Image 1 (cartoon, rainbow over the protein chains, first blue to last red):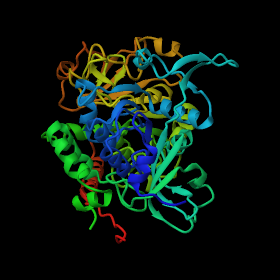
Image 2: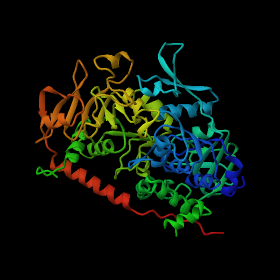
Image 3: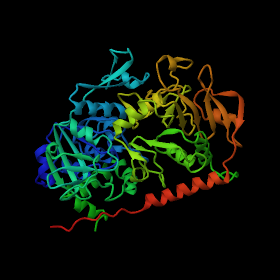
Image 4: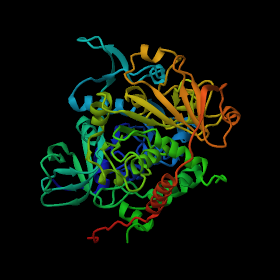
Length: 282
Length: 267
C-alpha cells in the first residue's frame, strides 16, 4: 500500500458534513490528523469519540464541528475542556449539538456498527436522567427469551474512522499495541479507515493474537512519527502530562486559544514542525 | 496540615483505601479513587485487582496515572483488553466487586451528577458527562464514593441524575432491578457517610479525629442525620502516610518529566 502525505489523505477522505471518529482511548490519539483537518478548514463535521480529549477541544474551538457524539468530555485528571464547554454553554464559535452516551453504550454502538447490526444490546441500568433527554441514546426493550430489561443502542457507522498506530508493514497491515480502547470496533464500523503510523516496517513480527488491522480494511495510510503527541504511542514516547496540564490555561480563554492554534497549527505545515516548535523533538 | 501531622486530604485518601479488602476486584475512577486504590494496594491489600476503564486489568502502577489510560497502567497490567470487553465481560457480567466513583454532586440517597450544573439545555456548567459511571454504579457488587464535602456538592436535589445510588430511597433501587447493592460508603474530608439500613438515606457514620458533627452538617446541603453509633476514625498510621507521600512524590516527578520524540531524518 502506498503511503500518502497526510494532507492528501485528509483531503481525499474527510469531507464537510462527514461523521468522523478519531479514536484511541487516551493512547494513540490521532492529533496530527486532527490538526490537518483544522488546517483544511473542514466544517459541519459530526465528531464521534468516547473521550473528546484535547483534539476535539481544538476541532470544536476552531468551528469544525456541528455535532458531537461522546461519553466523557473532560481533560483527564486536569479538569474541563474549555472549548467544548464554551460551545455547549455559549454556542461559541458555533452551536454544538450533543449526542450523549455512557462509555459502555458507545462501545456497544461501535460493536453494532462493526457487526452490521442496526443496534446493539446491553442490560438496562436504573433510572438515569440520560434516558429522559430529548434524543436519548438508548431505548428500552425486553429480552424475547427471558423477559429481562435491556437497552438497545443504535449502531454507529462513521463515514471515516481515523486511528494512529505504531506500525504498518510493506503490505499495508497495521499493528496497534498497548491500550486499544474501542479502536478496532470504530475501524470496523466505519465506511473508510484512515491511519497514521509511527513507522513503516518490512514485517510486523506481531504475536498471533496481536491487534492487526488487515490492509484490506485501510483506505489510506500516512507516515507521521509523533502523530499521537501530546497523547502517546506505547513503545515510542510517553503521554505529555505537562502539556495536558498546560492546555487548561491555553484553552480557558478564546483569545489565548485562538492565538495558540494560529501559531501552532494554522501557520505550521506539518506535525514534525509542531514537535520542533514545542521543543519536543530536536 | 493540621497539628495532627497529616492533612484532611491525606486522612480522606487513607480512610478510602481502608475500605478495600485484599483480593477484591476494583473498578477504579481517576483522581481520588485512583490514589486510594493504589494506596490500599501498597499497604494492607497487595492482592487488590485494579481495573481501569481503559481496559487494563490487574494493573500495579508505580506512579499514579494522570489520565485513565497512561502508559504506566498498560506496562504494569496483567492484561489489556478492548474497552468493550471491560464493560461487557467484566462489569456487566458481574465480575467487579467494588466500583470506586467521584462526582460533582451527590444527593442524600447517593445518586450522582457528572453531567451538568443548571438546566440541561442551557447549562451553567457543562461537566464531562457519564463516562463509565452509570454502569459501574449499577453493576459493581458495591460502590464506594469519595468526594470533598461542601454544600454545593452535597445537594438536596441533583441538577441531573447521571448515575444511581438508592434512587428515591428505601427499596427503590432493588425494585428497579439493579444487580449491585449500591453505595456502601461515602468518604469525605470530614469523615464517612453510610446509608441507613432501612431508608437508605446517607447519614454521618464516622468522623476524623478533631472534626465535629456540626461542621460536617454545615458542609452538607441537606439536613444530615447522625448515625446512632457515631464513630471516630483512627488517624493515618506512619506507614500509611509514608506510602501515600512516597506515591505522590514519585507521581509528581514522573508527570514533570519532559517528553522527547525521536523523529527520523528528513528526506
